[in-house]
Image (tube, rainbow, N blue to C red; front, top):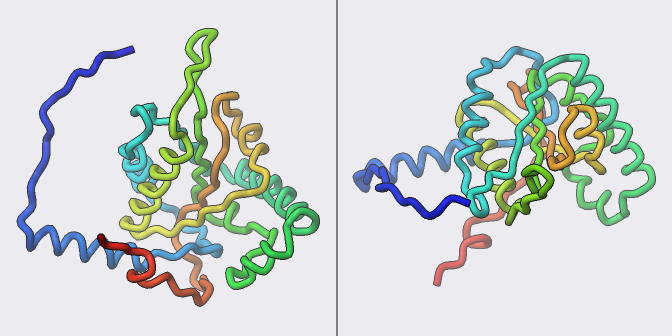
Length: 220
């Protein structure tokens, strides 16, 4: 294990006016973010995906263990397999396992077991969490895995939004088939599937409202 070895912090202090301007512009960008389910098949520059994942990789993580893997799928045949697997699990979930409370909770979202977004979007990013990593015959435990990967996903979504792309966080239930289809090692566990692309011309979103700031901000 490496010892603590500090280096000088590199930091640019912004003038207050510029800082506020950047903050307001970023807020406006994120306020325009919507999850969509109807994607255009139009190609997306690969560098936008690379940059977004690189940004996600800058997220803080427990003990700096960076317990994540981002698998990007663009192959049409593999996307079709992912969709088939997701729809099989989702149909079983909606028909047999979903509680009445859950069905009622998602009614305003307008979603169902049909997942055209997986095959329509030019890229599908499948995010895996790593509860441990192998070191020879040992399993090295990772700490705060779900929290760390959740923060990285937030960075990823923000980067995609700032690049003018749309995305959807899709969590098939269960997700185990993703690891098998994508040939991932045992120490990686699928967490979320994120189609990425431009919206289809006829894309719609549910008429929803976000909580106002005074409901989510407490100042002491």
